Image 1 (cartoon, helix red, strand yellow):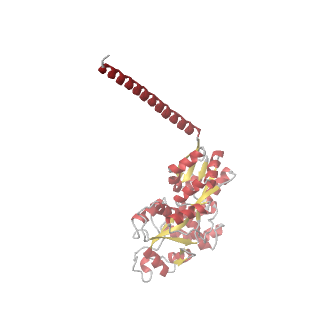
Image 2 (cartoon, rainbow, N blue to C red):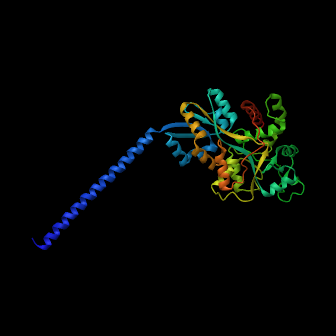
Image 3 (cartoon, rainbow, N blue to C red):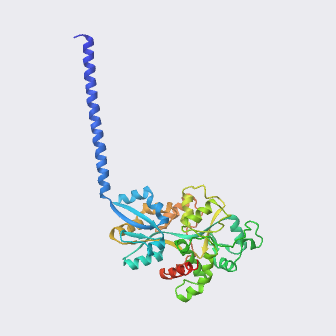
Length: 371
């Protein structure tokens, strides 16, 4: 056999071996991929799907992949539909859902009674705040509406109601050169016929006008003329809290000098490093304020499991805090405050309870009839 034939035979043998090894490796890889797909599908098949209807403020939280991953580790896949908290109580068919998760305690209380739910869970909350700007803070401080609170600036609701009752315009405030607008001095809210935040504003203002929680028809009749004016004099109002808050961020002081918002809306933007939050933007805490308590009502056993996880799982609590929510364990929110230098107090002192659901609804309906 010639030298060339020998070399050719050796090369052919080596190529055959390499080819066989390559095919073997490809088979191994293919088997691995198929196995991974099968395992993944198996894991997905084992997840229990739990359906809920939620206040729209929590939609971004439940849509976050990190939140979905935590639920998946507990064998749960949560599917949610957003709705207004009042709508969840009055107009939503709850039959298809395993839990209802409105953004207020009165709404949850009504659902719990109607559905005879054994328990509720309140895993996170957000106080109502007034978003404004430095020049307006200075102006209202001179007018006696903004005061130095216990470590944070407060918005004196009683002083504000007195100005609003007189129909005071911005340009009528003494020495006002910062914001001489020819419109009434009013906090911008959402439509009380649709929005939970407007209902929370009614809870605050009716408490002050009544000198305590409104709890009787006589008290309702006493406060309605004053509190109705706060809504009706605004003219057009939007149905979602996101609307006026976006106006605050984009249009600035000219359109919306005072905006009722959830603290979580502002905190969420700061945590995400949103450049639309500028240094001259400030939060005022109404004195008194109310907490928007995001309260989950289990309608079936699967919904109860979600409530337990939201209440007790530390990772879900930490993630909720990154969306600006104050959590059942205050450590999560306080850690975010320190880490991100959030301009919000860790503790809010002057907090009152809203009226019962039926009382709040009667007042809202009475205001709605005046539009």
